[in-house]
Image 1: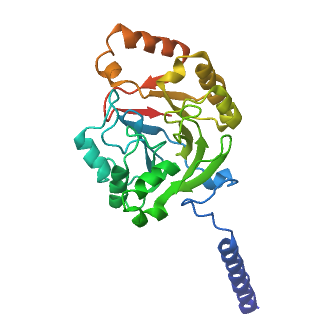
Image 2: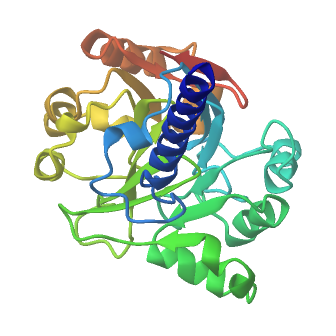
Image 3: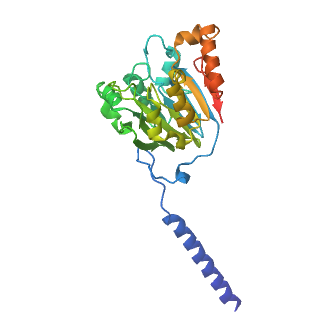
Length: 303
């Protein structure tokens, strides 16, 4: 009798283990993230633990954002820039293009548009050469610039270029970072494609709108407030007139604001003078959650 009971127990245990293993094996796997259309993903598949984001300033609208074991670069891979706005020093630019610390292990690179103070084709390709895991996200015009180098074919599977219709979103992702591309114009009627990026990293949402001059109606069309943006990177002119300020206050409604694209003269020469001090005091009085960066490689954390 004891032998029979023992045999039955072994059989039940084996069957239990078998069904447990089979159930785990047949659960559907999470979709791949590299440049896939991720619209409709359950949030549980995209979520990463909520951590503070560390933002490192490079120049103008260029930043590195790190959190949750991920890193991304936005508008940071450019060279000559545009007169009047900050550029990256040669030493830092070399580290960026060679993907050396602290710019090693970057998962995704973004350029909002192809202007020289946001993007350089050779700089982007240099970084992608030294960082074989990174994808590049930008406009069709930026992709054309990459093609014109004659080197594009070696990188084409790692380049995602799109310009959705205004009011529509293009969904993508890479290495656990969920990405939405928005058509946020660079001046109505100007022949310049400009993207806004909404990026989920470390359980937080970041919005970067490049050189947008989009009026409040565009942000209302996108219903950006529903995205619950944690950190919005916005050019300084969004704090100079009532329509732009309404867009920030009512239609974007970010928890934190980074004011960017400040004239280098304002940062280098006027931080202590009445001109910039007066403007900044006014911005802070209306948007106490706003900050700006004054020095290359300056860091700030956002919870």
